[in-house]
Length: 145
Picture 1 (tube, rainbow, N blue to C red):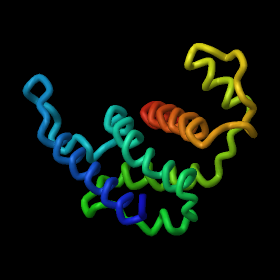
Picture 2: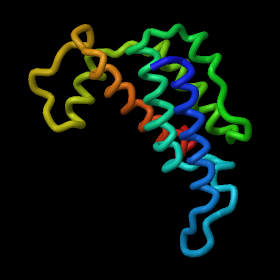
Picture 3: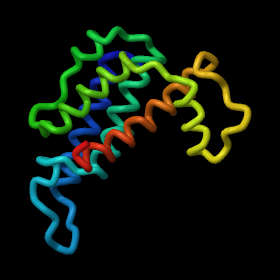
């Protein structure tokens, strides 16, 4: 996947998320401007799309951080999403998985036996563990941690 296609995927996703979030109804009174402020379900959706794009660029395509940062988000993207994506790019290039991360991930999946060490992780396993970090980050942001 090229940088242009990564940009396009993130931009398309965020545009769809913005439109969906602003037009959905919940009890007939869904807040207009839902995405102007942090929303945990929306954060999970951003993690699934933008987070996965970041992971692919980082671990599969080996893009340097500067190249990934040069991809801009669509105009009008809520500030909290811009901040989350920025934080996740930083995290993707700073985080190094530990054996504890691997055991915690395996435990969440229900089987902590015969797990690889952090040094033995495949790229898909590294991405899976990092994606779980994004979910926990969304939870922490909701709690204000």
